[in-house]
Amino acid sequence: MDVAVAGAGPTGLFMAVALARRGHRVTVVDRDAGPAPDGSWERRGVMQFHHPHGFRPQVCQALQAEMPEVLTALDGAGAERVVFRGGDGLPAPYAALRCRRALFEQVLRDFARAEPGVTIAQGHVDDVLREGDRAAGLRVDGRDVRAALVINASGRAGRIAAGLRAPAEGGDCGLAYVSRQYELLPGAERGPMNAPVGIIQTLTGYLIAIFLHDRGTFSALFIRPADDRRFGALRFPEVFQAAALAVPALAAWVSPDRSRPITPVLPGGRLYNTYRGQLDADGRVALPGLLHVGDAVCTTNPSAGRGIAVSLRQAVSLLGLLDEHPGDPSAVALAFDEWCLTTVRPWYEDHVYWDTDILRRWAGGDVDVTRRLPSDLIMEAAEKDPSLLRVVGPYMAMEALPSTLDEVEPQARALFASGWRPAPHPGPTRDELAATFPAIP
Ligand SMILES: Cc1cc2nc3c(=O)[nH]c(=O)nc-3n(C[C@H](O)[C@H](O)[C@H](O)COP(=O)(O)OP(=O)(O)OC[C@H]3O[C@@H](n4cnc5c(N)ncnc54)[C@H](O)[C@@H]3O)c2cc1C
Image 1 (cartoon, rainbow, N blue to C red):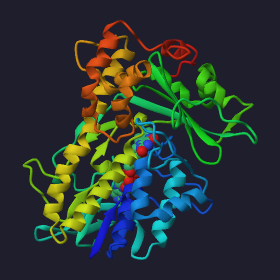
Image 2: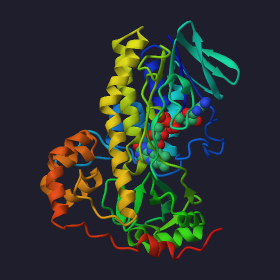
Image 3: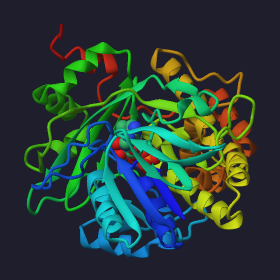
Image 4: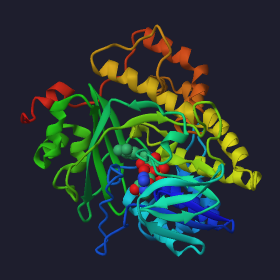
């Protein structure tokens, strides 16, 4: 069958290769031209492209199942596979990946281009073609790309066939990223770490992180309330560097005797928590043969690094349903919608609750022990009381849904109700840090 995929991001490329390996002829259309001849890749329209990405073990699991050669190619390109111990103390069955998103996508794209049965075309998808009551391909810059199955993998900013689905739930999560990539100097050791990606720390009113990537590269990151305009000053390289040096955990990495910056400062655009199913407002499949997957279904605040894991899990599920219901795209859409509701939507809900509460606390509010704790506080409690890890560990690894935390939430809440609070990590408060920034008009 001819398949048209809108969007050559991680989800679209993964779907394309996997469908071609099932014997289909797949055309992937993306408005982006791909890397320039000198290897640089700006990737307008995917604002997160050069921001730090952590690749959870689910990403390796999906690649291992459908296209294990991509993992070998990533190894060859310098990505680092890291196996962590799970909540049960045993090594996780799949590795996490440390590499820049640009490297990940370049390797996957090169692989897809070489895959028999996959064609990557450049163009803007204007609309989905219809024939009778079925999807029949894509309209691309006024041309028709005909297909019996259409996959919308156009990401969080995609507007394709927007009128054919019930509107998205959610919106701006209220937090914003600003990051910069660095490279360790020859012979320099890595800085201290407290997390699989590198470092994640909550300070008073903001978060910082170091994400380790490939070949000695890493990103330094500030996450702060989007409406704190003072942090706009971080887009100036000297302000960013001074701010990073003011936070001990970041300073240990970005000090000039350990590393050097390799990109400009990357100010983040808006970050979303959104969920959008397959069906129209009446709960029907509006256009059989059109399926939505990846960030086009669910986007979560990236600070927990879940996006590509959730997207490729969706892709694997969708492939399974297409195998199960050949020639019945309505059945696939209904079954996939149901699967997403129970397996994907909870991650969206988890972040909405967590982000709303963290913004309230960052504005000066205390932990509210009169209602369910958000997941970040349950994770913090597990650091104090490791008996919680039995339940919290699988959630952190995304092997168990957020609702599994219900079992230990009362125990975590009792800890907070007793007056215990996690000790703040060393470093300036948000106000103290912002006081050092120059005023910007
Ligand atoms: C700041 C930030 C940091 C993140 N960090 C992490 C992380 O640490 N770990 C993690 O797992 N995830 C992270 N994510 C999420 C991750 O980036 C997404 O989950 C991932 O990009 C989803 O892939 P996708 O292929 O579904 O969509 P995208 O990557 O958005 O790809 C969609 C593609 O569709 C194309 N497109 C859209 N519309 C059209 C059109 N009309 N015509 C032609 N082409 C079109 C776009 O050009 C793009 O190439 C982060 C997200 C953000 C915003």
